[in-house]
Each structure stands twice: as C-alpha cells, then as structure tokens.
Length: 93
Image (cartoon, rainbow, N blue to C red; front, top):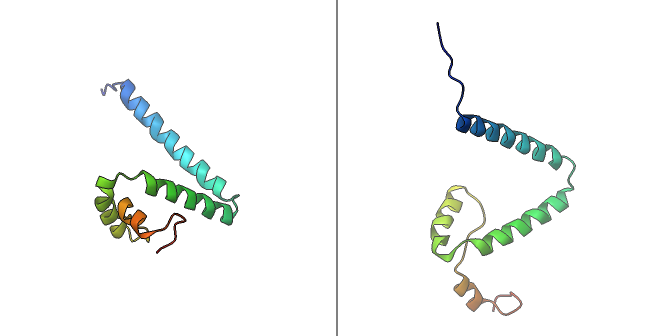
C-alpha cells in the first residue's frame, strides 16, 4: 500500500507560479500577433535605451562579455567616455 503525502504549501505555490508564468508567456506571444511591427520596434528601442542607462558602471564589462557570447550588436560604453566624445546634442565631435 502506497501512502501519498499531500504536497507542501511551498511546492503548491511554486507549481502555481510556474503555471501562471507559462500562461502569461503564451498570452504575451498571442498579443504580439496583433502588434504593428513598427510599433514593436519602437518599443524595443525604448526598452533598450532604458536598459543601457540602468546597467551599473561597475557591471558593464561583465555584461559586455555576456552580450558578446549572446552575439548581439549592443555593447555598453563607459558613460564618462561617451560624454567626452559627444557634444550636448549627442553627435560625435
């Protein structure tokens, strides 16, 4: 005779969170079917620019190594170096 132990509250909560996460990802994927590609690119550019500002300077070299491994085009630069190389309008001098 096999006695089944009821799952603990922590394991039930973890299972519920995993199921909810999958459902949210599916919902978001389906929502993308109805999005204008131009709008999606604009939102991606906004998100990328915000992320670039939020990466702490001390972590930028390590983040750059991961970006290289992921083979993405974005690379982080030292903010001080960028501000020295650009005029107030963001153009290279």
